[in-house]
Length: 171
Image (cartoon, rainbow, N blue to C red; front, top):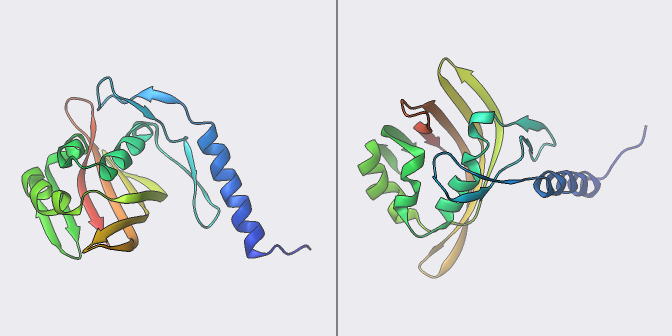
């Protein structure tokens, strides 16, 4: 049996991720009107080398969400949160869009090198639960700081047909 080095495994994972990204297509996100976004492939390769299938309902949402987090307009994230969403972070709990917008999103933007790596998607009734890892950079007082951790998103289809976050847990 042949053993592979960590560098070989990392290179293989990066190559697979590159191939998935190269196969991505550009489509219009139903939540963003006529804005074109590059869709994430229907599968994501995790750091552990696992392949995670992204539910069809969420495939067009991820690229726009990542772009919004990297931007400077906190309002751009509005289409991803329900009015009654709850966000739980180490810094506190934020309830409802207005509090999430003013107390959590606005102070955080912009994030650079923002990456979400889903590790699982499960269904709980009418909710899709997404869990994974995040990584981004922030600039605080002129210093660049890498931030990473885990997240759990709970997505629910709204009466208008869009999928929005109803709960976010960031650790």
